[in-house]
Amino acid sequence: MNQLTTFHIVVLISGSGTNLQALIDSSVASNFKISAVISNNPDAYGLQRAEGDGIPVQVINHRDFDSREEFDLALSDAIDKIAPDLIVLAGFMRILGTEFVKHFSGRIINIHPSLLPKHPGIDTHQRALDAGDKEHGVSVHFVTEDLDGGPIIARDRVPVLKEDTVQGLANRVLEKEHLIYPKVVSWFASGRLHMKAQHAILDGEPLPPTGVEVHRDTITEPSDIHLPDHL
Image (tube, rainbow, N blue to C red; front, side, top):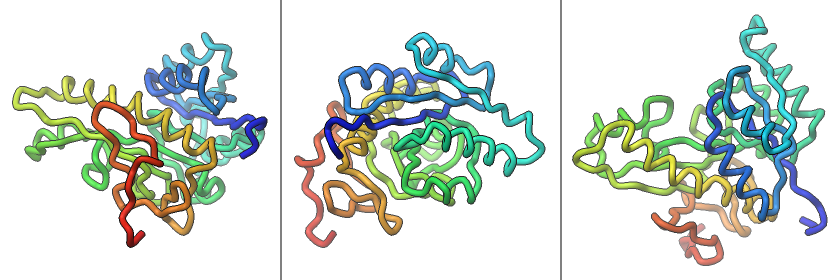
């Protein structure tokens, strides 16, 4: 990508927007710009975060539509008018339909609080504790028609402690989310990351099924990561 070309993203939120805030903070010195924030929830605190930083916001309340398809169409039309390079789901609590995902194929990413493919869906921290997992974490993946099943780009881990509560575990995972998500967006903005034939491609090489395993305390640059020879 031409260095003079600004890479624009739209962030979709439903709640408090802590990952949005991490993206806002990182965008100041990064290679992407947040062109708009859209929420399905008019009371989402993340909208205030965006407005406080001068980012345009829109509310497309799913309750105003008779069907998911109608909501998806309204959301798709709004995003098309903005024409972003990437759609970033940051705590967006609506399942996007097939037509929406196909329309923006390869240009939607999501962050999920588990080590995918383990624990897709909701209540991941409780499920990790109930399962007796020794490790838990966060995954960033491309969005496809399969719920939390798109190609995994990157993961980071936290240990599950003996004394862990759901909230304590969630807080430690959230810290990792705030580090990993802006970095993955930056990889995409620099032209290093894309999706091809249902595979995440980084620096011209297909990633393993579980994506890049980043360091637990720092985000490792992709050029420093050794990919398996057979990929």
